[in-house]
Image (cartoon, rainbow over all chains, first blue to last red):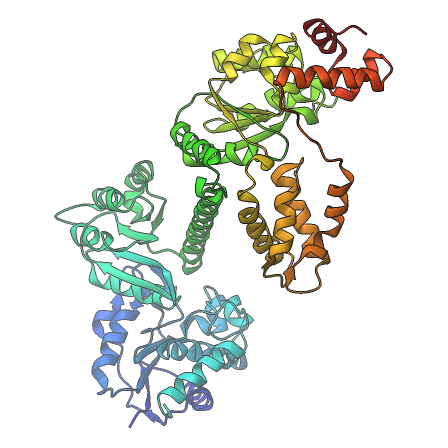
Length: 183
Length: 451
């Protein structure tokens, strides 16, 4: 049976996992299963950049659970993600594939030298989770700035999004779910 | 999926290729990856990549610059973005000189790369739109779009095809509305200058001084109001074709200037000291008899021979009546679609009426008549009622029986009749005949007519 596996990579606050679980349950018609937390993979750390390669995280997620057709696995981490080409990532997903990873690191107000703000962290986390899971269901970046699928290349653009998909992306998701028979 | 714009990422590091490809795929692009230059070129052969990200340093085999050059050999339009580390920025700049569109230093900000990709693709879209419009324009003016089944017109079209790629000057003669500019465009768009500008100038529309600055441009301060240097039509047509319509109307001074341009391919802007060199093909047109104008001393003989290297004489519509049904149907289809009127054709009685009309305004008049009929048409087919006003106009003109006499005799009789009508007043008779007084005097002398 298809499911959405949620796994924390390294130390992730429980309340953040709960927000993410609730948002995923609201938007995606898959039963959610929490996997036991895993450690950040050794090979992911880039000592020169003090960041973690997201592709290594995704490789590790692929090995975690046998993924049947229609299932997704979402890794959540609090470490800073990057790829060799880019200075950072809020998250990454396999386009139309089963694996996605989201980093909370740059969603914290503290990262920008501001006092912590839990409600803002929750909003940002939900938006990024919808965004990356949206990619796994074949959604590409949306030109509607307030849609969860719009490309955010800095935190202000994350804040400009709503915690939902625009009508067009939402419809595309619904069509995809109905085509896949309840997935 | 933005399938029209595939992207290639070339890097020997698998993690670099795959992570970059994954990031771009989220944006909807089709992305391929290649671990080396050789594989990249293999992939580029069958695929029209819009952008290729190529790592500058790849050990063994081709490096980034060699890869870029090989990709350009098979895909000259692909935009190459060289990926480099800080230590190799100088080499990346060298890559730009060799033809790379951009270079990016890794790691770069996601916003930077996102903007770079959008900027390049926007340019690609404009280039592709431009190419499409050029193609459309070229198609629009190709020979087979001039509608005819008249043998003389077909010969003319064959001639235009033959002369299309030459630089020789062409003189197109024909009454107003016979399609002189259309033929000029057909010559331009069928030849090797098709990608370059076609610039049309109506010489009769402007005064001598205005036409001079229009043709040759002017320098700042050349005259009151010349606040900045301006290029003339000859400069704007550089590499292409200039079409000088109604050339018979230009002043003696401009005739001299034009002769110099045709002879030397260079000129001065108005108020300028520096010569401007140009490569322009000249196609001129007139509804006057230039040989006659030369004879009368109104047009320079040397310029006439310079212009008249290849002469094309377009027949008036009344001498190609077999084309009237074809042209009429063509105009009905085109104009009804432009005006969003549901008019499907033209009935036989209306066609007969159109074929019988003399069309002094030629094809342009036919086009206007059809447009007027479509505007007022109340059902889906044009009939003779839609052209009743034309019928009245035709009926008003008196029937003309042409006597079986030599042409000179016809002219003599016309002159005598005009003089009789104007009671011997040469000035008024010349106006009525559409010639000037000195020409009429010459003719009076030639035909030994006393007045």
